[in-house]
Image (tube, rainbow, N blue to C red; front, side, top):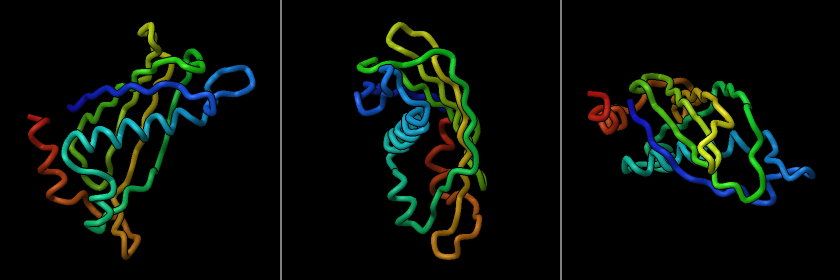
Length: 135
């Protein structure tokens, strides 16, 4: 299992007229966390795409517990519980600066061949990059 945390400051443009983060922005926070996790392991979505693999989102599930507000400092905890195969599922938890869980969700991505647009397995090099963290 791999777990990492990143921090995101809520920007004004992410809030609604009530000063509360619009629900759609949580998906963006999840993506930022996934992107940064990949960077930490020495790769990126860009590298995967250059290698001929794309990762479309298949499913997003989330639950809201409490609102985030403008200028809050959020901690996004991201977990990858198992090595990817043809799919990769991330668990996300978002905490406010007081440490209160305000949002929880899951995102499932698929691996897809860039040229054929057909499902494929995770590249061997990618699985090998993550494998040491699962032993």
